[in-house]
Amino acid sequence: MARKRYIKSKKAKPKHALLKKIARSKVFLIAASALGIAILLIGFFAFSPIFQIQNIHIDGAQSVLSDDLLRIAQQKIGRSFGAMQINNIFWADLSSVAHAMALSNPKIASVAISRKLPHSLSIQVVERYPAGIWCRQDGQCFFLDTEGIAYENTERDVGRLIVEDADEALPVRLGAQAIAKDRLDILLIVYRQLQQVFVLHEEHLGIEKIVLKNSSKGDIHTTEGWSVYMDLYEKVDWQIEKLVLVLKEQIPQKKRSQLEYIDLRFGDQAYVKYK
Image (cartoon, rainbow, N blue to C red; front, side, top):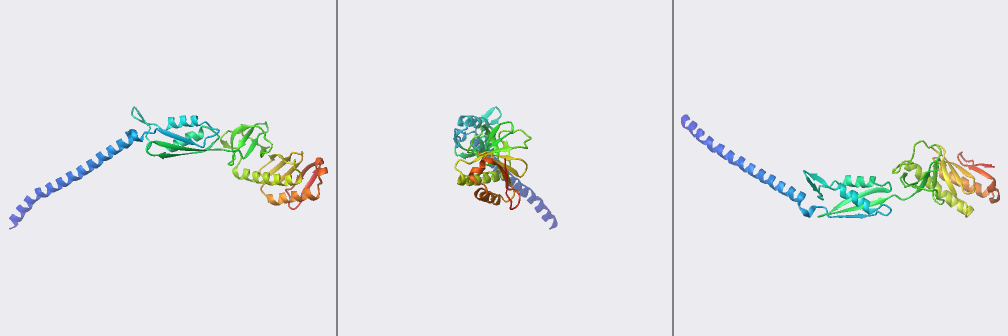
């Protein structure tokens, strides 16, 4: 009996091996088929003319020429595949294209690109707009956006916030930070509130410029030739309230021509100096 069982097991072994071989063949065929289908799909999406970029729409460009941006986009969207240049909508590196466009002109604040299937790109450009003017001691002036970025050469323009840095050390580079955003925000608040105060006292009284003397001191030069000294990081609202009281109760309009400065930086005091 033992001999027979041994013979049976020996006969069953080839059959079991055959089944395993067939199973492996099926797995191989399935894997090969899946790989073939994947290659066909990749080839279709990569090389089909349906998905080659044909249209590029640019919105938001006003002072920046759309033709210049379009030229950059057309140069950057292509990918090399051997000797072939493919402008496939799926393969285009949109973040690199947007980055190149944003760097092309300091007037551009941001660029966003989205795919519009099957073969179009939509490009949204956001340009910088002036929040103020940054001037150097040598007379060079630049527009500042709300982030404190200097982005365009300009002239002094009465009616805008003009900031001078008395402690300037580095040259201004277009597209780079000229002043920290939080500092610019404070200057804008001071400028607007002081303009309102001055309008209440005299229609033609205004701010000529704000000169930054150190990290916190701001010298506000008025169009009448006298100045207001403020600590830009210490209770700005209270300093402006003191200025209102001083102008109303201590300095009549006829004496303002003799005024040199009003210093609001120290506690509850407001120090007035005449020429």
